[in-house]
Amino acid sequence: MPKFATSPGTRDILAPDSARWRHFQQVFADVVEPAGYAHIIPPMFEDLGVFLRVGETTEIVTKEMYDFEDKGGRRIALRPEQTASVCRAFVEHRPVTPWKVWYGGPNFRYEKPQQGRYRQFDQVGIEALGPDDPQLDAEVIALAMQFYAQLGLRQVRLSINSLGDSGDRDRYATALRAHFSAHLDALSAESRATLERNPLRVLDSKRSEDAAVIAAAPKMADHLSADAATHFAHVQAALRSASIQFVVDDRLVRGLDYYRRTTFEFVSTALSAAHTAIGGGGRYDGLVADLGGPETPGIGFALGLDRTLLACDAEGVFAAPASRVDVFVVDVTGGAEATSICSALRAAGVGADRAYEGKSMKSQMKAADRSGARIAIIIGDDERTTNTAIIRTMDDGSQQSAQRDNLVASVRQALGR
RNA sequence: GUGGGCGUAGCUCAGUUGGCUAGAGCGCUAGGUUGUGGUCCUAGAGGUCGCGGGUUCGAGCCCCGUCGUCCACCCCA
Image 1 (cartoon, rainbow, N blue to C red):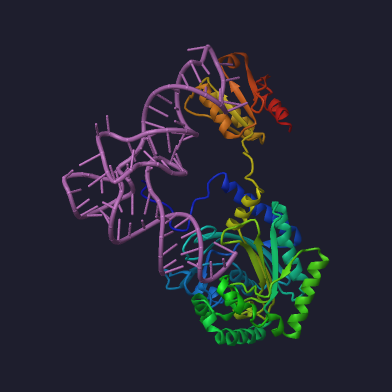
Image 2: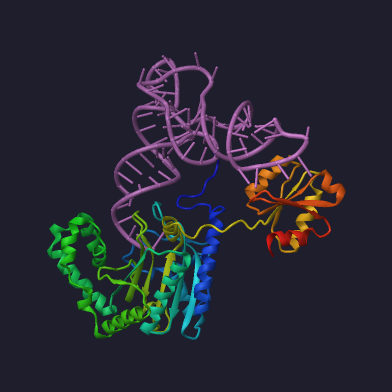
Protein backbone atom coordinates (compact mmCIF):
# COMPACT_ATOMS: atom_id res chain seq x y z
CA MET A 1 0.00 0.00 0.00
CA PRO A 2 1.26 3.49 -0.78
CA LYS A 3 2.46 5.57 2.10
CA PHE A 4 0.57 8.62 0.89
CA ALA A 5 -2.60 9.18 -1.04
CA THR A 6 -4.56 12.30 -1.92
CA SER A 7 -6.42 14.00 0.91
CA PRO A 8 -10.15 13.31 1.18
CA GLY A 9 -12.15 15.06 -1.48
CA THR A 10 -9.15 15.71 -3.71
CA ARG A 11 -7.77 13.66 -6.55
CA ASP A 12 -5.26 13.61 -9.36
CA ILE A 13 -6.69 14.33 -12.76
CA LEU A 14 -4.76 12.03 -15.05
CA ALA A 15 -4.72 11.63 -18.82
CA PRO A 16 -6.93 11.47 -20.75
CA ASP A 17 -9.21 13.37 -18.35
CA SER A 18 -6.62 16.05 -17.77
CA ALA A 19 -6.62 16.95 -21.48
CA ARG A 20 -10.37 17.01 -21.39
CA TRP A 21 -10.31 19.45 -18.49
CA ARG A 22 -7.92 21.72 -20.31
CA HIS A 23 -10.01 21.54 -23.45
CA PHE A 24 -13.10 22.36 -21.40
CA GLN A 25 -11.55 25.60 -20.22
CA GLN A 26 -10.38 26.40 -23.73
CA VAL A 27 -13.86 25.93 -25.18
CA PHE A 28 -15.22 28.15 -22.44
CA ALA A 29 -12.70 30.87 -23.16
CA ASP A 30 -13.52 30.63 -26.86
CA VAL A 31 -17.19 31.29 -26.09
CA VAL A 32 -16.89 34.16 -23.62
CA GLU A 33 -13.74 36.02 -24.72
CA PRO A 34 -15.22 36.99 -28.10
CA ALA A 35 -18.17 38.38 -26.12
CA GLY A 36 -15.87 40.80 -24.33
CA TYR A 37 -15.10 38.88 -21.18
CA ALA A 38 -11.43 39.15 -20.21
CA HIS A 39 -9.62 36.54 -18.21
CA ILE A 40 -9.06 37.19 -14.52
CA ILE A 41 -6.97 34.97 -12.27
CA PRO A 42 -7.74 35.81 -8.66
CA PRO A 43 -5.67 34.31 -5.86
CA MET A 44 -6.76 30.99 -4.41
CA PHE A 45 -6.81 32.38 -0.89
CA GLU A 46 -7.94 35.69 0.49
CA ASP A 47 -8.75 37.45 3.70
CA LEU A 48 -11.51 35.45 5.35
CA GLY A 49 -13.72 38.55 5.44
CA VAL A 50 -14.06 38.58 1.66
CA PHE A 51 -15.98 35.33 1.79
CA LEU A 52 -18.11 36.05 4.82
CA ARG A 53 -20.25 38.13 2.42
CA VAL A 54 -21.27 34.92 0.71
CA GLY A 55 -23.75 34.48 3.50
CA GLU A 56 -23.83 33.98 7.22
CA THR A 57 -26.74 31.56 6.89
CA THR A 58 -24.99 29.30 4.40
CA GLU A 59 -23.00 26.27 5.38
CA ILE A 60 -20.36 27.40 2.92
CA VAL A 61 -19.48 30.07 5.42
CA THR A 62 -20.48 28.51 8.73
CA LYS A 63 -19.02 25.05 8.32
CA GLU A 64 -17.23 24.52 5.07
CA MET A 65 -14.61 27.23 4.94
CA TYR A 66 -10.99 26.17 4.65
CA ASP A 67 -9.70 28.92 6.88
CA PHE A 68 -6.51 29.25 8.88
CA GLU A 69 -4.18 31.78 10.40
CA ASP A 70 -1.01 32.45 8.44
CA LYS A 71 2.42 33.17 9.91
CA GLY A 72 1.64 36.89 9.87
CA GLY A 73 -1.43 36.42 12.02
CA ARG A 74 -3.83 37.08 9.14
CA ARG A 75 -7.12 35.25 8.98
CA ILE A 76 -7.01 33.49 5.59
CA ALA A 77 -9.45 31.29 3.71
CA LEU A 78 -9.12 29.21 0.58
CA ARG A 79 -11.75 30.56 -1.76
CA PRO A 80 -15.03 28.63 -1.67
CA GLU A 81 -16.14 30.38 -4.87
CA GLN A 82 -14.86 33.19 -7.02
CA THR A 83 -17.60 35.77 -7.28
CA ALA A 84 -16.59 37.41 -4.01
CA SER A 85 -12.97 37.51 -5.15
CA VAL A 86 -13.94 39.17 -8.41
CA CYS A 87 -15.93 41.80 -6.53
CA ARG A 88 -13.01 42.39 -4.18
CA ALA A 89 -10.80 42.82 -7.24
CA PHE A 90 -13.26 45.32 -8.65
CA VAL A 91 -13.11 47.37 -5.47
CA GLU A 92 -9.34 47.13 -5.40
CA HIS A 93 -8.68 48.14 -9.02
CA ARG A 94 -11.76 50.20 -9.87
CA PRO A 95 -11.87 49.31 -13.57
CA VAL A 96 -14.23 51.18 -15.89
CA THR A 97 -17.63 49.59 -16.25
CA PRO A 98 -19.02 47.51 -17.69
CA TRP A 99 -16.34 45.22 -16.36
CA LYS A 100 -16.75 41.77 -17.85
CA VAL A 101 -14.44 38.97 -16.76
CA TRP A 102 -14.22 35.20 -16.85
CA TYR A 103 -12.35 32.79 -14.63
CA GLY A 104 -11.64 29.13 -14.22
CA GLY A 105 -9.95 27.21 -11.47
CA PRO A 106 -10.27 25.35 -8.21
CA ASN A 107 -12.38 26.28 -5.22
CA PHE A 108 -12.37 24.67 -1.79
CA ARG A 109 -15.09 23.64 0.57
CA TYR A 110 -14.71 21.38 3.57
CA GLU A 111 -17.54 18.98 2.78
CA LYS A 112 -18.02 15.27 2.94
CA PRO A 113 -17.21 14.05 -0.55
CA GLN A 114 -19.61 12.13 -2.71
CA GLN A 115 -20.44 11.86 -6.37
CA GLY A 116 -19.97 15.20 -8.11
CA ARG A 117 -18.86 16.84 -4.88
CA TYR A 118 -15.26 17.32 -3.90
CA ARG A 119 -13.35 19.45 -1.44
CA GLN A 120 -11.32 20.85 -4.27
CA PHE A 121 -13.56 21.39 -7.25
CA ASP A 122 -13.18 23.39 -10.43
CA GLN A 123 -15.53 25.95 -11.80
CA VAL A 124 -15.57 28.23 -14.79
CA GLY A 125 -17.64 31.37 -14.72
CA ILE A 126 -18.19 34.94 -15.81
CA GLU A 127 -19.05 38.11 -13.93
CA ALA A 128 -20.29 41.40 -15.35
CA LEU A 129 -20.18 44.44 -13.09
CA GLY A 130 -21.71 47.85 -13.61
CA PRO A 131 -24.89 47.73 -15.68
CA ASP A 132 -28.25 47.08 -14.11
CA ASP A 133 -29.58 46.39 -17.60
CA PRO A 134 -31.81 43.29 -17.92
CA GLN A 135 -30.29 42.82 -21.37
CA LEU A 136 -27.07 41.99 -19.57
CA ASP A 137 -28.85 39.33 -17.52
CA ALA A 138 -30.01 37.77 -20.75
CA GLU A 139 -26.52 37.96 -22.26
CA VAL A 140 -24.96 36.19 -19.31
CA ILE A 141 -27.55 33.40 -19.42
CA ALA A 142 -27.25 33.13 -23.19
CA LEU A 143 -23.48 32.67 -22.98
CA ALA A 144 -23.88 29.78 -20.58
CA MET A 145 -26.38 28.14 -22.90
CA GLN A 146 -24.08 28.74 -25.84
CA PHE A 147 -21.26 27.07 -23.97
CA TYR A 148 -23.37 24.03 -23.17
CA ALA A 149 -24.33 23.80 -26.82
CA GLN A 150 -20.67 24.07 -27.77
CA LEU A 151 -19.88 21.08 -25.56
CA GLY A 152 -22.63 19.18 -27.32
CA LEU A 153 -25.02 19.07 -24.36
CA ARG A 154 -28.68 19.05 -25.33
CA GLN A 155 -30.42 18.08 -22.10
CA VAL A 156 -29.89 21.24 -20.09
CA ARG A 157 -32.89 22.86 -18.48
CA LEU A 158 -32.76 26.52 -17.54
CA SER A 159 -34.77 27.69 -14.54
CA ILE A 160 -35.02 31.34 -13.61
CA ASN A 161 -36.54 33.31 -10.79
CA SER A 162 -36.35 36.70 -9.18
CA LEU A 163 -35.55 37.13 -5.52
CA GLY A 164 -36.39 40.80 -5.65
CA ASP A 165 -34.39 43.57 -4.06
CA SER A 166 -32.93 43.42 -0.60
CA GLY A 167 -36.10 44.66 1.10
CA ASP A 168 -38.31 42.36 -0.96
CA ARG A 169 -36.25 39.41 0.00
CA ASP A 170 -36.46 40.23 3.68
CA ARG A 171 -40.23 40.76 3.52
CA TYR A 172 -40.64 37.50 1.66
CA ALA A 173 -38.50 35.66 4.20
CA THR A 174 -40.73 37.02 6.97
CA ALA A 175 -43.87 35.91 5.15
CA LEU A 176 -42.41 32.47 4.58
CA ARG A 177 -41.38 32.14 8.17
CA ALA A 178 -44.91 32.98 9.25
CA HIS A 179 -46.40 30.49 6.83
CA PHE A 180 -44.12 27.61 7.73
CA SER A 181 -44.31 28.33 11.45
CA ALA A 182 -48.07 27.98 11.20
CA HIS A 183 -47.64 24.52 9.66
CA LEU A 184 -44.70 23.25 11.66
CA ASP A 185 -46.30 19.90 12.39
CA ALA A 186 -46.67 19.21 8.67
CA LEU A 187 -42.99 19.89 7.95
CA SER A 188 -40.20 17.35 8.01
CA ALA A 189 -37.70 17.59 10.85
CA GLU A 190 -35.02 18.60 8.35
CA SER A 191 -37.12 21.43 7.01
CA ARG A 192 -37.92 22.66 10.51
CA ALA A 193 -34.19 22.92 11.10
CA THR A 194 -33.71 24.70 7.79
CA LEU A 195 -36.48 27.13 8.71
CA GLU A 196 -34.45 28.30 11.68
CA ARG A 197 -31.49 29.18 9.50
CA ASN A 198 -33.03 30.40 6.28
CA PRO A 199 -36.75 30.14 5.48
CA LEU A 200 -36.15 30.58 1.76
CA ARG A 201 -34.23 27.38 1.59
CA VAL A 202 -37.19 25.39 2.84
CA LEU A 203 -38.63 25.92 -0.63
CA ASP A 204 -35.74 23.84 -1.93
CA SER A 205 -36.79 20.75 0.01
CA LYS A 206 -37.45 17.76 -2.18
CA ARG A 207 -39.03 15.70 0.60
CA SER A 208 -42.49 14.57 -0.35
CA GLU A 209 -44.03 15.32 3.07
CA ASP A 210 -43.10 18.98 2.61
CA ALA A 211 -44.61 19.31 -0.84
CA ALA A 212 -48.11 20.36 0.24
CA VAL A 213 -46.95 23.04 2.66
CA ILE A 214 -44.50 24.39 0.11
CA ALA A 215 -47.12 24.48 -2.60
CA ALA A 216 -49.34 26.57 -0.35
CA ALA A 217 -46.51 28.93 0.60
CA PRO A 218 -46.52 32.60 -0.37
CA LYS A 219 -45.03 33.33 -3.78
CA MET A 220 -41.94 35.44 -4.28
CA ALA A 221 -43.65 36.97 -7.29
CA ASP A 222 -46.20 38.59 -4.99
CA HIS A 223 -43.48 40.23 -2.94
CA LEU A 224 -41.46 41.83 -5.71
CA SER A 225 -41.09 45.57 -5.81
CA ALA A 226 -42.32 47.27 -8.96
CA ASP A 227 -38.72 47.81 -10.11
CA ALA A 228 -37.74 44.22 -9.53
CA ALA A 229 -40.87 42.91 -11.22
CA THR A 230 -40.24 45.09 -14.27
CA HIS A 231 -36.63 44.00 -14.40
CA PHE A 232 -37.63 40.35 -14.27
CA ALA A 233 -40.22 40.85 -17.01
CA HIS A 234 -37.58 42.41 -19.23
CA VAL A 235 -35.17 39.57 -18.62
CA GLN A 236 -37.81 37.06 -19.68
CA ALA A 237 -38.68 39.08 -22.75
CA ALA A 238 -35.02 39.26 -23.73
CA LEU A 239 -34.60 35.51 -23.31
CA ARG A 240 -37.67 34.87 -25.44
CA SER A 241 -36.48 37.11 -28.22
CA ALA A 242 -33.18 35.22 -28.13
CA SER A 243 -35.14 31.96 -28.43
CA ILE A 244 -33.77 30.63 -25.17
CA GLN A 245 -36.03 28.08 -23.52
CA PHE A 246 -36.59 28.55 -19.80
CA VAL A 247 -39.02 27.84 -17.02
CA VAL A 248 -39.85 30.26 -14.25
CA ASP A 249 -39.43 28.41 -10.99
CA ASP A 250 -40.58 30.53 -8.08
CA ARG A 251 -39.08 28.01 -5.70
CA LEU A 252 -35.61 28.50 -7.12
CA VAL A 253 -33.71 30.03 -4.24
CA ARG A 254 -29.98 29.40 -4.74
CA GLY A 255 -27.60 28.93 -1.91
CA LEU A 256 -25.78 32.19 -1.52
CA ASP A 257 -27.10 35.09 0.49
CA TYR A 258 -25.89 37.80 -1.84
CA TYR A 259 -28.25 37.00 -4.68
CA ARG A 260 -30.78 39.68 -5.60
CA ARG A 261 -33.30 39.89 -8.41
CA THR A 262 -32.47 37.49 -11.24
CA THR A 263 -31.32 34.03 -10.26
CA PHE A 264 -30.96 31.03 -12.50
CA GLU A 265 -29.85 27.45 -12.49
CA PHE A 266 -28.87 24.91 -15.11
CA VAL A 267 -29.96 21.34 -14.52
CA SER A 268 -28.90 18.36 -16.58
CA THR A 269 -31.90 16.16 -17.22
CA ALA A 270 -29.51 13.45 -18.37
CA LEU A 271 -28.20 12.97 -14.83
CA SER A 272 -30.06 10.79 -12.39
CA ALA A 273 -27.85 11.25 -9.34
CA ALA A 274 -28.55 13.71 -6.56
CA HIS A 275 -26.45 16.46 -8.05
CA THR A 276 -28.17 17.45 -11.24
CA ALA A 277 -27.44 21.17 -10.93
CA ILE A 278 -24.48 21.73 -13.22
CA GLY A 279 -24.34 25.48 -12.97
CA GLY A 280 -26.05 28.52 -11.60
CA GLY A 281 -25.83 32.19 -10.99
CA GLY A 282 -27.63 35.43 -10.57
CA ARG A 283 -27.50 39.11 -9.73
CA TYR A 284 -25.65 40.24 -6.67
CA ASP A 285 -26.37 43.95 -6.61
CA GLY A 286 -24.98 45.12 -3.31
CA LEU A 287 -22.06 42.74 -2.95
CA VAL A 288 -19.52 45.27 -4.22
CA ALA A 289 -20.81 47.83 -1.75
CA ASP A 290 -20.64 45.24 1.03
CA LEU A 291 -16.97 44.80 0.23
CA GLY A 292 -16.34 48.52 0.60
CA GLY A 293 -16.78 49.69 -2.97
CA PRO A 294 -19.29 51.98 -4.64
CA GLU A 295 -22.84 50.77 -5.11
CA THR A 296 -22.35 48.57 -8.19
CA PRO A 297 -24.71 46.01 -9.67
CA GLY A 298 -23.31 42.70 -10.86
CA ILE A 299 -24.36 39.44 -12.38
CA GLY A 300 -22.60 36.22 -13.21
CA PHE A 301 -22.63 32.45 -13.15
CA ALA A 302 -20.40 29.55 -12.22
CA LEU A 303 -20.43 26.12 -13.82
CA GLY A 304 -19.03 23.07 -12.09
CA LEU A 305 -16.52 21.19 -14.20
CA ASP A 306 -17.05 17.79 -12.62
CA ARG A 307 -20.80 17.87 -12.85
CA THR A 308 -20.81 19.28 -16.34
CA LEU A 309 -18.45 16.54 -17.44
CA LEU A 310 -20.70 13.98 -15.74
CA ALA A 311 -23.53 15.40 -17.82
CA CYS A 312 -21.34 15.13 -20.93
CA ASP A 313 -20.67 11.48 -20.10
CA ALA A 314 -24.38 10.86 -19.62
CA GLU A 315 -25.08 12.34 -23.04
CA GLY A 316 -22.05 10.75 -24.64
CA VAL A 317 -20.58 14.04 -25.82
CA PHE A 318 -17.33 16.01 -25.42
CA ALA A 319 -14.90 13.11 -25.49
CA ALA A 320 -11.29 13.55 -24.47
CA PRO A 321 -9.13 15.03 -27.22
CA ALA A 322 -7.09 12.67 -29.37
CA SER A 323 -3.41 12.03 -28.80
CA ARG A 324 -1.08 14.78 -29.93
CA VAL A 325 1.61 12.29 -30.80
CA ASP A 326 1.46 12.17 -34.60
CA VAL A 327 4.36 9.84 -35.17
CA PHE A 328 5.97 7.07 -33.16
CA VAL A 329 9.52 6.21 -34.10
CA VAL A 330 10.46 2.54 -33.87
CA ASP A 331 14.22 2.14 -33.99
CA VAL A 332 15.71 -1.30 -33.48
CA THR A 333 19.25 -0.23 -34.34
CA GLY A 334 20.06 1.11 -30.92
CA GLY A 335 17.96 4.24 -30.53
CA ALA A 336 20.23 6.96 -31.86
CA GLU A 337 18.24 7.17 -35.09
CA ALA A 338 15.05 7.66 -33.12
CA THR A 339 16.65 10.54 -31.27
CA SER A 340 17.61 12.45 -34.40
CA ILE A 341 14.34 11.71 -36.19
CA CYS A 342 12.24 12.82 -33.23
CA SER A 343 14.24 16.02 -32.95
CA ALA A 344 13.75 16.82 -36.62
CA LEU A 345 10.02 16.06 -36.50
CA ARG A 346 9.43 18.05 -33.32
CA ALA A 347 11.33 21.01 -34.70
CA ALA A 348 9.02 20.86 -37.72
CA GLY A 349 5.97 20.90 -35.47
CA VAL A 350 5.13 17.23 -35.81
CA GLY A 351 4.37 15.38 -32.59
CA ALA A 352 6.85 12.55 -32.16
CA ASP A 353 7.50 9.97 -29.47
CA ARG A 354 9.69 6.87 -29.30
CA ALA A 355 10.69 3.89 -27.19
CA TYR A 356 13.74 3.53 -25.00
CA GLU A 357 16.05 0.88 -23.66
CA GLY A 358 16.45 -1.06 -26.92
CA LYS A 359 13.15 -2.88 -26.80
CA SER A 360 12.22 -5.48 -29.38
CA MET A 361 10.36 -4.40 -32.48
CA LYS A 362 7.23 -6.11 -31.26
CA SER A 363 7.44 -4.24 -28.01
CA GLN A 364 8.09 -0.93 -29.75
CA MET A 365 5.18 -1.48 -32.11
CA LYS A 366 2.95 -2.07 -29.12
CA ALA A 367 4.14 1.20 -27.67
CA ALA A 368 3.43 2.87 -31.01
CA ASP A 369 -0.09 1.50 -30.89
CA ARG A 370 -0.63 2.74 -27.36
CA SER A 371 0.69 6.20 -28.16
CA GLY A 372 -2.23 6.89 -30.45
CA ALA A 373 0.12 7.97 -33.24
CA ARG A 374 -1.31 7.74 -36.74
CA ILE A 375 2.05 6.87 -38.21
CA ALA A 376 4.97 4.72 -37.18
CA ILE A 377 8.41 5.28 -38.59
CA ILE A 378 10.44 2.09 -38.58
CA ILE A 379 14.21 1.97 -38.69
CA GLY A 380 15.77 -1.48 -38.91
CA ASP A 381 19.25 -2.51 -39.98
CA ASP A 382 18.27 -2.50 -43.65
CA GLU A 383 16.92 1.02 -43.48
CA ARG A 384 19.97 2.25 -41.69
CA THR A 385 22.34 0.89 -44.31
CA THR A 386 20.25 2.17 -47.20
CA ASN A 387 19.53 5.53 -45.58
CA THR A 388 15.80 5.03 -45.73
CA ALA A 389 12.89 4.70 -43.33
CA ILE A 390 9.55 2.92 -43.40
CA ILE A 391 6.44 5.04 -42.94
CA ARG A 392 3.65 2.84 -41.68
CA THR A 393 0.05 3.97 -41.39
CA MET A 394 -1.23 2.40 -38.21
CA ASP A 395 -4.90 2.29 -39.19
CA ASP A 396 -4.59 0.02 -42.21
CA GLY A 397 -1.04 -1.26 -41.90
CA SER A 398 0.01 0.12 -45.25
CA GLN A 399 3.60 1.22 -45.49
CA GLN A 400 5.99 2.90 -47.81
CA SER A 401 9.71 3.53 -47.91
CA ALA A 402 11.06 7.05 -47.72
CA GLN A 403 14.46 8.59 -48.16
CA ARG A 404 16.03 9.55 -44.88
CA ASP A 405 17.04 12.95 -46.32
CA ASN A 406 13.50 14.17 -46.85
CA LEU A 407 11.81 12.08 -44.17
CA VAL A 408 10.13 15.06 -42.51
CA ALA A 409 8.53 16.13 -45.79
CA SER A 410 7.38 12.58 -46.47
CA VAL A 411 5.84 12.29 -43.00
CA ARG A 412 4.04 15.58 -43.42
CA GLN A 413 2.64 14.38 -46.69
CA ALA A 414 1.49 11.14 -45.09
CA LEU A 415 -0.17 13.13 -42.31
CA GLY A 416 -1.76 15.40 -44.85
CA ARG A 417 -0.22 18.64 -43.66
C1' G B 1 -22.10 16.96 10.64
C1' U B 2 -25.74 12.18 10.38
C1' G B 3 -26.76 7.20 8.38
C1' G B 4 -25.55 2.89 5.35
C1' G B 5 -22.40 -0.24 1.79
C1' C B 6 -17.40 -1.50 0.67
C1' G B 7 -11.66 -1.91 1.48
C1' U B 8 -7.99 -8.87 -1.46
C1' A B 9 -2.45 -7.90 -7.59
C1' G B 10 -1.63 -1.61 -11.43
C1' C B 11 -7.46 -1.98 -12.58
C1' U B 12 -12.37 -4.71 -11.98
C1' C B 13 -13.54 -8.36 -8.73
C1' A B 14 -14.01 -14.08 -6.79
C1' G B 15 -12.61 -16.36 -2.22
C1' U B 16 -17.92 -21.76 0.45
C1' U B 17 -19.90 -23.10 7.74
C1' G B 18 -12.82 -19.69 9.96
C1' G B 19 -8.57 -24.91 7.90
C1' C B 20 -2.41 -26.62 3.54
C1' U B 21 2.00 -22.75 -0.61
C1' A B 22 -4.55 -16.52 -1.65
C1' G B 23 -7.33 -16.90 -7.26
C1' A B 24 -9.63 -15.03 -12.15
C1' G B 25 -10.19 -11.48 -16.07
C1' C B 26 -8.00 -7.12 -17.93
C1' G B 27 -3.33 -4.63 -17.98
C1' C B 28 2.09 -5.22 -17.86
C1' U B 29 6.83 -8.05 -19.43
C1' A B 30 8.79 -11.80 -22.60
C1' G B 31 8.17 -15.53 -26.22
C1' G B 32 5.30 -18.20 -30.32
C1' U B 33 6.41 -14.79 -35.22
C1' U B 34 14.90 -13.71 -37.04
C1' G B 35 12.17 -7.21 -38.99
C1' U B 36 5.90 -5.03 -37.75
C1' G B 37 1.02 -3.06 -33.21
C1' G B 38 -4.37 -3.62 -32.74
C1' U B 39 -6.75 -10.97 -33.11
C1' C B 40 -4.95 -15.66 -31.02
C1' C B 41 -1.68 -19.04 -27.91
C1' U B 42 2.13 -19.82 -23.99
C1' A B 43 4.98 -18.32 -19.92
C1' G B 44 6.44 -14.76 -16.25
C1' A B 45 6.47 -10.71 -12.87
C1' G B 46 3.23 -8.56 -9.39
C1' G B 47 -0.32 -9.34 -2.87
C1' U B 48 2.75 -8.35 5.05
C1' C B 49 -5.93 -9.51 2.00
C1' G B 50 -6.25 -0.78 4.25
C1' C B 51 -4.08 -0.16 9.36
C1' G B 52 -4.16 -1.43 14.81
C1' G B 53 -6.02 -4.50 18.51
C1' G B 54 -9.10 -8.77 20.09
C1' U B 55 -11.44 -13.93 19.90
C1' U B 56 -9.36 -18.81 18.30
C1' C B 57 -5.09 -24.42 17.97
C1' G B 58 -5.77 -21.54 13.44
C1' A B 59 -8.54 -15.18 10.74
C1' G B 60 -8.85 -12.56 3.93
C1' C B 61 -13.44 -14.52 6.54
C1' C B 62 -15.77 -13.35 13.34
C1' C B 63 -15.60 -8.82 17.10
C1' C B 64 -13.87 -3.67 18.39
C1' G B 65 -11.41 0.64 16.90
C1' U B 66 -9.29 3.57 13.12
C1' C B 67 -8.32 5.47 8.29
C1' G B 68 -9.91 5.51 3.32
C1' U B 69 -13.69 5.09 -0.34
C1' C B 70 -18.65 4.92 -2.37
C1' C B 71 -23.88 6.11 -1.69
C1' A B 72 -27.80 8.80 0.69
C1' C B 73 -29.16 12.91 4.01
C1' C B 74 -27.53 17.87 4.91
C1' C B 75 -25.55 21.50 1.72
C1' C B 76 -24.23 22.88 -2.96
C1' A B 77 -21.23 23.41 -8.47
